[in-house]
Amino acid sequence: MFTEGAAGLSKSCCLPRRHFVNSKLAPPPLVASETMRALLAAAAEFAALKPWESMYNRHIVGLTDPVTGETRLGSVLGNAGEVFGAVFYRRPAGLRWVLGLMACPDESMSLEAFEGLDALKVEFVPKRQMFKKDLDTLNALNFKPSGRGSVWPQFQSVQPGWLPWFIDQTEAEHLLADLPRLTLFSALLHNQSTLFDDRAPAEIPFLPSPMPSRSLQVEDLDWRPLVASPEPCSWFQATDEQLAQLRSLPRAPAAAYEYGCSLMPGHAVLEKGRRCCSRIGLLVEHRRGLVLGFDVSLGTASLVESAGAGLVKTLVQSRFLPGEILISGKRLEPILEPLCAVLHIELILSEPLSALAAAMASVGEFMRVGPR
Image (cartoon, rainbow, N blue to C red; front, side, top):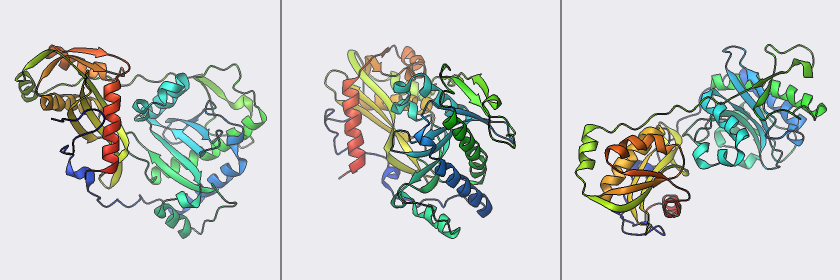
């Protein structure tokens, strides 16, 4: 049990050893030289157009995979003058993320929503920001970008729970199919600046598949309203052993705890040779802000399992069953409600949870610095 308040954590806090072991990173996936050369040429053509000068985040284009028929949504990065490149949202989670961003920009940029991001991207960065393994690949292909500054193409795969990683052969082929089409669409939009006027945020122009052999025309676009598929909803099912352990705890009916289970991208964990995020579960006393329970899990695990198992563990660490548990964010409510009902704990959706927020910030600082 922790004895310090939200302003700091006890140094007796024990994190799993794996979270501080600097294991060896896995080598990047192999990508055929001819594929990478073609992708670099496509990236150079895209960058030469400088589409970020005329395209905004709301300018999303629909792309249909020419082989699988999968839907991806492409967007240009860089109108704010900070990050330059292109991103292609994929699979249900990625499409749900970007459609949510378009519907509720402020809410979708929260850390809670960020964990669902699934995309491929190319970002143009200064040479000093390139990973050595990326530079080795470009050097082996005798690639030299034109110009200076943010001109070096860095291709990355982003998956829920993982930090950005190197692309593999299949992902390189997807980028090679999508990037030239986004370039053509950017050229069209440059000459048709009112294209998105009077269009609903979720109305997406889809490009033809296959693409015409001529330049892209406004008439080629197929505007479709897209609605994000609902996020799979489930609840945590405690084992008989976990329930027996919880029911053995003494009750403190007047007590109120705050609970949260959030990603902490600033603390990377090496899993299977790749960097992934940690997910932190915290149980905090509502009135005084004391940290009563702490749990660390991999960000790649489902929120259902991490949040449920984290609540079980932190309640056991607290040594009591409270009368109330306060949570923020609607995602946790359906996950934890059945367990709380069985334990006769009132689960309350409440904003803001200042004690929990302060404790999370303290944990983040502790994990960034490491134990002393």
